Length: 169
Image (tube, rainbow, N blue to C red; front, side, top):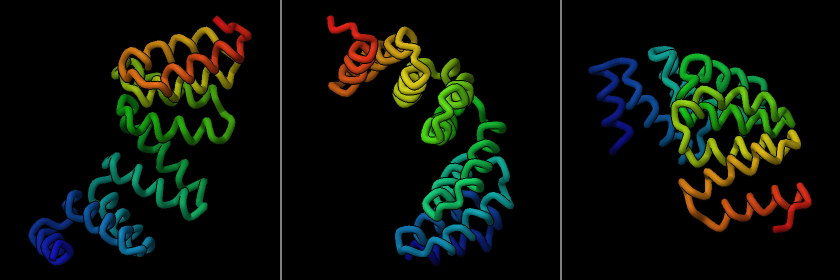
């Protein structure tokens, strides 16, 4: 099956990130988090800058309630890949969840410049601005979100900004 094929690939090319990362995902699907953690760690040992694995391992740590470890992984990923939207969104969400809206904005600055039309970044930045009481920037972020990813949710978020700002137009 897939597991034996990935393991054969590792015999030929030890440290292959695709194989180790895939084995970790298979272990997770089977409910074997510690085994997944070991595969993720093996991936990072061979490829310390592999951001996809850093995010996956941070998620695993977070689910295990090892929040400090999760945050360290996300910060390391952001340090190595500041313009990668997925990295910025993950770190930004963690900061926003910790009521650190300003840190969430800082964490997403580089990625926002590199990918100004990235829907998840716009949504996160809008929420961070709203948490800071900056209705103007929150509204601008949600307006841009409505343009790049038209949905009822984007308009709902914009309406929330207006309601909070007592602007019911």
